[in-house]
Image (cartoon, rainbow, N blue to C red):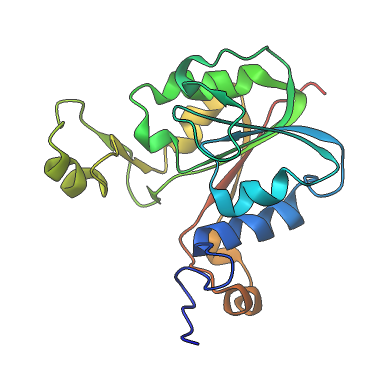
Amino acid sequence: MRVRQLGYCPRCNSKARHRRWWLFLQTETNLFTDRLRLLHVSPNYCMSRRFIHFPNLDYVGVDLHHHRNIRARMNLQSAGLASDSFDAAICMHVLEHLPDDHAAMRELYRVLKPGGWAAISTPIRLDQKTFEDPTITDPRERERAFGETVHVRYYGYDLQDRLEEAGFKVNLHLGKDVGVADQLAYGLRDDENIFLCTKEGG
């Protein structure tokens, strides 16, 4: 069997980012231990197919499009969900697709209960500010400017400021800080940085 340390797992089809997230959620959150109502935005199948069977989770997968493990179709920029109704949220590589990311961040904050948390990641360069230009609409130009044909910005270090403006208390967990042993064991990259965002007051 060919070893693909930084690519897809040949057994579960996870990407390196998914394995990084799984380890992060195990070590840095209460997702695996406490009874939680979890909002998973645009869920990837390799993780959602496990979360739906966790006995401690009330799992709610949402996306614009209907696919496996989606309970509701919705746009995160104007989520039709009750305020203060979730204990936790996962938003992995979603915000870079949304024209109004500020609205999406405010919605994540709104639907969380006081004391709840949201884990968020995007493609990001921590050595520069966020670059966005709404006049760039051609897919080839978007790929050149933002890294993907369907992205509308390339985030920089000021993403933390945007999340804090939405109301969150934010802690950044750097991919490069994951121990070497875990990086090798799980075939991780060092560029998947995760923002753990808390709604205070609980």
